[in-house]
Image (cartoon, rainbow, N blue to C red; front, side, top):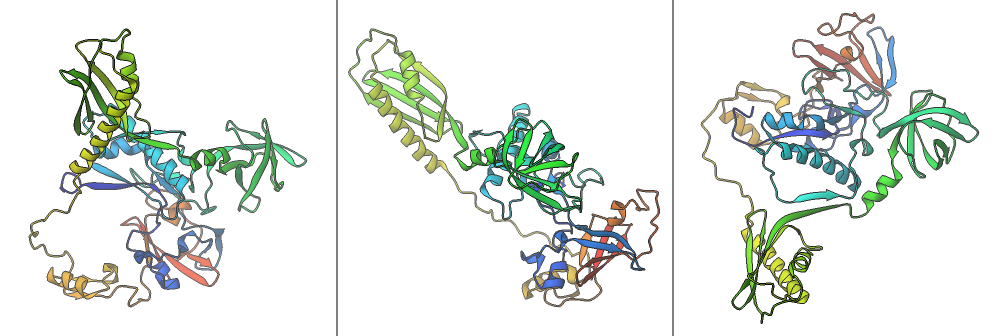
Length: 457
């Protein structure tokens, strides 16, 4: 794609996945009147369904059969850069501030490591971020991770057991004793942590850690848990406390030069973007008894809470002049103010460019169905201007019967091991299959030519 277009390309790399193709999900609108295509999804894909065949025989009982794991392509960033992506999207809908801090820091560090090795790639912005914590993607909300069809179809894309956050694996239950148990694992647990596990009914159950003694855990309320049960931590008390404080800082590198002149001293500051200021202060110079270089470097590098960080301090004096710390501090403060002002003046807001009208290109179809999502007269006029003869109204305006409400690459026939393309085993059940939730009954159809599963009401 990048070889064929001139616009920058953005790739979605992390966060919650929609099971249906974007813009082609009508399940929420059909069942509740809330349109997923217009930001009002009721998330029917996260509900528990039972799967039955044409005879009513139950195949799967009460599992989240349309729920996907979360995207994580952090190990593919360099390949995506090489493929032409210049922007990476992290999903953050309804996420809290600790999620934003942790996940953005996680990807920032990954990207910085790549940019250090690959100088042909240039950062989109200036400055360097440092962190008071070590970002770990598993510590923030996640349903388990998947690269999701980046290279091929894999079995790791679904989260049938729960749509809730699992967090990070921390070990398995080893031995039960009274109101406590021991855990076999390498992660350090803390008082106040939140742990979860799948109980005997296959449901996600959680509890709070009251206290920890070595590898022995004392829950606030002892759960009904068995040895060898895998445990996950979806709330790390210590980590959350770290992120609740100021935990990251971004600084611009500046090169500082301190010079003498016939009338006093000159201070030059230049940041990594090329913004440069020069400040001259008159001063009656006199020779110093001790070397001044170390004190000059120390005082000028004290950039404190400013956006800057000294990468180099060069001293170019003809003699070892005495320079008071008060003068250095005053010149540094004034130079920083001037540099910030200069950066504001130099900054140019990115504005949309006027683009020449494109050549008239006919739309590839003559009839547009509800899948075109046309819900206003301007959209209809646009399509007709490009050769479309008939334009159907959007599903939300005119709901249609017996049409696909979801188009998904996730395929339940594949998940069960019965895919005629990739797997050899044949299904012992009779199609069509149905998904049942309370009074809702959804019919499944499989389009093997396009490798899709379609969901009907």
